[in-house]
Length: 488
Image 1 (cartoon, rainbow, N blue to C red):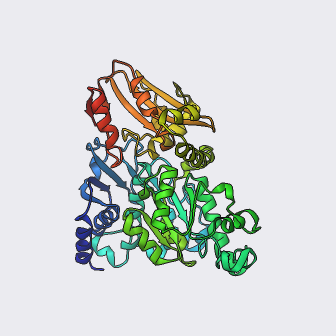
Image 2: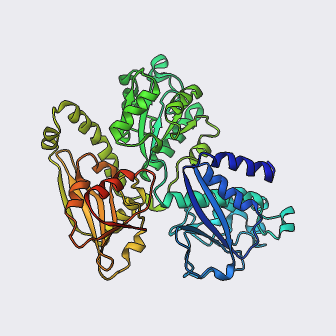
């Protein structure tokens, strides 16, 4: 694709963009104009129009412009200072060393290889180079632009930089919805029986076994798994319970929709049970027409056509994870979603809302946050999109001892389970402001957000606000209840 063709494609994608963002690039390397287009393309595919500007390298220590995403990419010879303020930093690499030709893959990377993201907003360039290959990563004909790296590498850096930013700001898919026949195993269970389907550690069923192993790892990083299948429920459940080669077990699935209804209706059922928006889900199916049918009802929902050879790569384009996502809270999150099925049944059986509340026996507890709570609070602030003021914090930022700042953790339990830490509140006495407010979606539907707001101290005069595209309802509710000033 030529430069002009790519630019025209981006302009078409941006015509339906629902959000505009500003980003600046700071690098001691020239970087050809393609890099800016690659950033715009990656954001345009997410429904966002990006305006990209360049800032001189000498100004990298200047304060970051408000509402601007700063990307710093130092070349191999640059000195990167820790006080540089950036949303995304591209790490420096050593793989271009002449010794790499001798050592090859044994050449030790300079950073922990936690692909593709390192912690604290750093993009691991060495991992990307290792994936592409050193030969394809270094500039050849592009050197006429003064570039050190190839256009192919710059494209991958742009894609991963956008993913890193969006992931750190909670804008990512949360749930994988799985078909069964042809996806979790080969064959059709209703026709071939349990003994006839293909799934094994070796042979023809190996691809399905490997795919389930990947899903298991993604679940450990907080990705919710659900099943959406046109089948007999007992046939599917029996495979999960009885087939010895299954990596996924019945307890790994947060919610089930197994029937002969159109899959778009099954998706609606799952969204209702899990209290998730369909656009937070990704459907994996081996039938393209099924994907198209669901897509016609939910255009923003992710979809992946299952093919053995490409499933890992295609899924990686839709599901983004970070190292800090792997924590002990994820198993509790899965259990909570499973309990939502029971809660939903209770709601259907109860006659009035007061009866529901009585049977659920909701209990809230608010207390000052402890050091051990900070990782979970950071995780919540990055994940929450609906019941949040949109402010995101890393655990390190929360650890900063700010005078006059109160950080509170919100805990919840009901008749089914202790839900643990489900929300957080940050109060800034100096600014008389509600700095941070967020609740997990598993706490919604119980009026906990209203109760928490009503308990806030009288000295609050303002609240910070960042739009997530899903939290407008909270903004309107705050405006109707409190005469607070909104600040960025």
